[in-house]
Length: 375
View 1 (cartoon, rainbow, N blue to C red):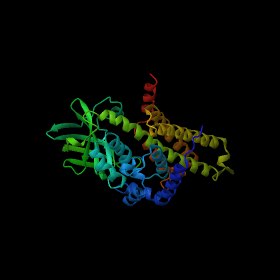
View 2: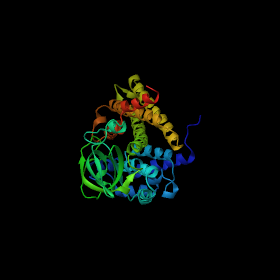
View 3: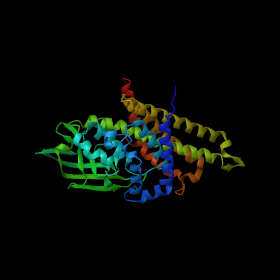
View 4: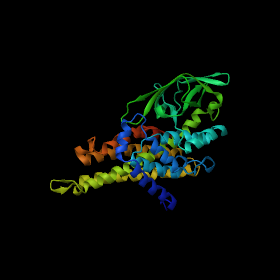
């Protein structure tokens, strides 16, 4: 069984790694943690020029149309800890527009996304409606959309909305009668208030308040009452995107830890010669390789338009657990220096800890896997 990447895919990986090593050093990562925007517009423009925003879209919208290639790219972004609204815009918003949007919505939004001119984010969770309840459809959102002629008036609060403070559009889940629907909302609309939240990973999450925001009825995505169906599909794409980001980060953490174990001397011996350290690094490798195989299996299925709900959840369950275990062991091997703010390890630890629960933690996705086998 050949699990290797094609020559074209290997070229994508190599070029992405070289570009990000040059354009996204840890100095930039640290600067963006303190920057209110949370991303570099100059770097965003360069990424668009490389065609990265369009990697997953068909040629007619300026892309190349490959989900597997997107996962390869995201893995390298995770290795570099790339800050910014890439997943929010391309995965959580661009893909649903492609698959569920009207022709007018596709024409107006996809090409600007590919060209790096638009940032869009998904607004789903709420103070009283948490992520797991949304994806499992256990509780309807409190945000309500009321029909008013050719428009809807939307009111409610959305919590933990990534990059909303810099977004041009919001893709917002709201109640419409007995069902729920997704609305494309211009972020400049009157009645929208956006407040940045403090987060562990210093990524840019927001609380978004919508106060009688008027939205044209033509801005519904996928049809009235289709919100649950679309959010479930977004959950698969986004979970795998997070798996790839985590995987890239864990690969870098493992490499740095093994390198440190080969250099650090304690008790007149390299610490890598101690069995306890060897076994920790071996366990880290096992977790990383497991994350890689499960992530790429699910990504391949999605790229072939095959059902991959179970595989996506298997990958996210494993990878979420691996993110916690690998980074903790890495810090233990490094000792006190591993938690120093001057060391890169704490950057990876905080990012991994945040992504562990993003789009569902291990327990949430184990429930999905269990249901898929009839339990």
